[in-house]
Image (cartoon, rainbow, N blue to C red; front, side, top):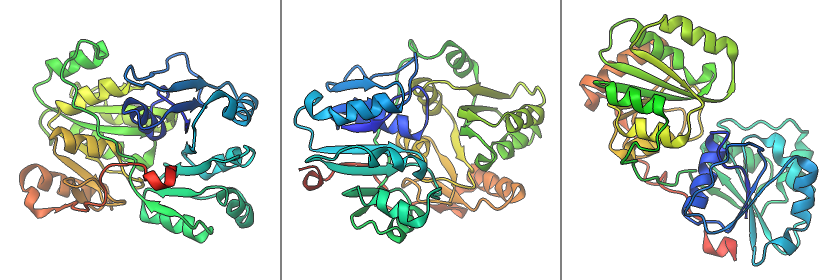
Length: 331
């Protein structure tokens, strides 16, 4: 059983769990994020419960043994350590607890000894980066597995079910690049928007934003874009629409100051789309890397990426492949 959420909302946690369900890698999904627009994969053969707050979560979890048969492991997927308090109050019975936190830089809001107690509940902890690995080891975790949150998704072939706004822009464009992520400054969307708004780059830019908004930063992006028709900002589009646009793009950019892996990076490479990503974390093999130091250095490396990519480092870490469960851990 996996505990976390399915889209919507869109994000690393929900996209990962959607693909777990889509590939029937789990038998049951417990969804902590209420929404009227839930996307449950049509291929998913397991069970689903959408919860409505902590008390409902606690009640269902306590009696999950009666509701779900043959569950040997519960995999908790959260973004930050603040959520570690939830599994602490759930009886383990005879199941194993797994944990995956998706945030790029883990910092617990709890005192060290409380954090260690919370983490001691987990039999297996998945680390998505070296900094996450250090966080878990500092807090006494014994079984820490270095992995990724990537599960491949086939490149979308048809546009009949794609969001009309995205479909229209994709079909009318003569060529575009893509950048995506939360509407936060650490994603450095403003670097890319500024580059396109300056007129130094031919073609269009599609910016896909999702999750909680920094309204001030969003206003900054629109101000930098300045009404340029070559910059389009999409807000809270579903993964199907995003992947459709990504698969048909000229390239994908990921200039984050902070990241844990970047599922979109892996998808783009898998779709055959060139990728330029910051080297702040391990990247899927095949992505071109640059150091996210400043806007000026980004511009230099962007033009290397476009015209002389052989001058850039390429991610070749074969250990950053696809996520899978260890059968021995689940037994």
